[in-house]
Length: 126
Picture 1 (cartoon, one colour):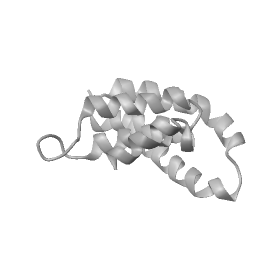
Picture 2: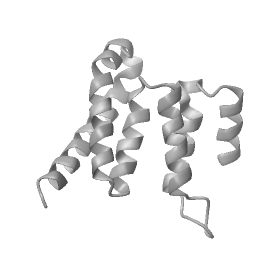
Picture 3: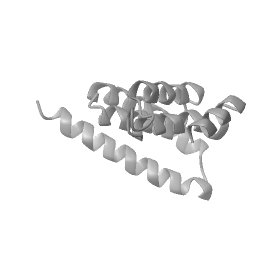
Picture 4: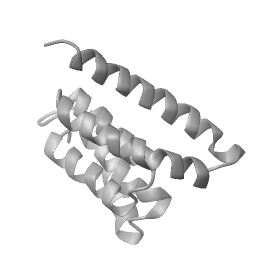
């Protein structure tokens, strides 16, 4: 998968709203680390950030970073990135419409709510 995502990114880094970079970020985040596999926090962060830089108005790119920060217990960064997501949300809702986007919006809304809840829970505890 790594090779295929990298190849797709070389051919068209903006394909599927920066899908190759977004998926590489998830792959490196979720795979076990060395020596078992290719998982690597620094590399995951790099590719996730690249996806946001390439297509900054796509909600999934921001959601992945928010969720990654929460996974890595980087709450302040998650909170900051959630604010960015909230800022792009209304325009994305206007631009990504129709039946083809309904499942994505259901997923994104659920994930955003869960991230907000987790951030608020940890923010209220010392």
